[in-house]
Length: 199
Image 1 (cartoon, rainbow, N blue to C red):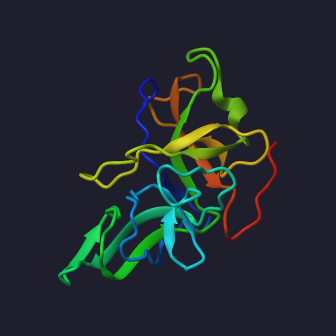
Image 2 (cartoon, helix red, strand yellow):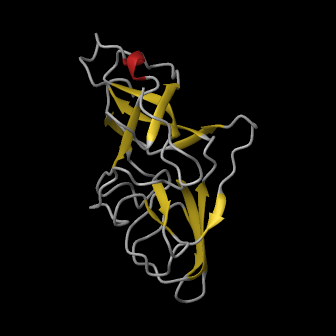
Image 3 (cartoon, helix red, strand yellow):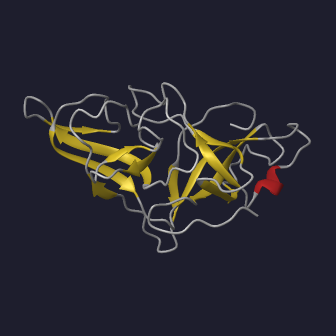
């Protein structure tokens, strides 16, 4: 990972309680965007879950969008009534009894990939701890074979960002001067809590 760009979305990794559990929400039947496991999602006025962008699609923007959490998979009955469990929401799916699982607790920490903003090999990422970043909307956004996201956090924001970097995952092949690193983040701009200011 240290010298290879291989984003894997956001992976739930820690909670002070020792328990990490997704909560059940709803996706509207026919919702026309893939949501991959590890994608940030938002809650819309209809009470349903969408991709965490301005318009709920991969062409939308992310700045200032309050997030509900991280998508963990879904289940639904398809158009023939067949029960289906999936790691991702396939765009345009028509179904009933739709359940979307989301890690929505604001205190949950996640692992994700971060790109060294300086010169790899010499610039330390330590100065990024406490800083805030938005997520990067990748396209197509993930794999329909595995259902896993390929998003990550982006550049440091000057005011407020959707995520706050709290530390490093400490994987065996990682150094904080590498080109890419697995970092620990918390959701900062969360629908269930107030955001904090950038340091």
